[in-house]
Image (cartoon, rainbow, N blue to C red):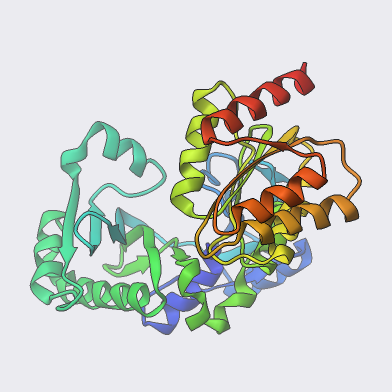
Length: 380
């Protein structure tokens, strides 16, 4: 789950990470009022969960309340990378001496937190990493020991933070690490972390991504999810605890198990097709869950064919077949299904499918070939 900048900064503030003064506005009139309260130059920042807001005109410096109202009226309602701007974060302008990139994420190879920093932060950090990787410094944090002061101090030296700010930087580093671990985040990022002309460290931007698998431990965060950036299918999938990601192809995929789902998508592409989604119904899925998954795919107008690939272990093939049968009874569709069932109660499942006159396959390769052929015929 990705948090907006204003949500991330609310959390930063609770952990004593310095942020600029500011508030959220959803109308030009609110933007004017907040600017009057700040009583100085402010920055209007579109709250959309995409990168490159500044280059797209979503971040603007203004010097007066009237100008804030005028600029806000132009940004609100605009679309940045096809996402509408509904809210603006109005913050006091900060006089910047230096921009720094500072963030934490998962090092999956080592099973540790990876702290990443660069003396050249800002919007082009990805370009810096690509062209000048020597300017990016990395520190691995042992989860049993946590972030040690000497690690933050060494990093401060690497990115040339003035010595008089080392103590502040170490405290900020500890705070960001606590945010990262307390929230079960996969990313906690400040870009840029700035040194002001007044010799202060301030988090000018913030990004936090929470591991969805840990959200049951953080019920207080659930109402912070922005469902406006999701497709209707993704929102519906969450209601049924389905792992669903929409893609650009036209072959819907319903599979049990993430590894098998990836293999299914790979063989579809190998046979010349394009998957329309990743959808893992998980182990032990009931017929109702299967039916819900199929309804989600059938509402995707890009889908021309649906490939169902089930390896029955905990999941019973007859339950899957009943879910398919239930969907066809409730949902009037001309989209063809190609089904491969193997494993627990396979014979019973295949008999249910035979009674419904559905297309079946004995192997994944055969199923992929049939699904790709049908999708190409229907797209012609």
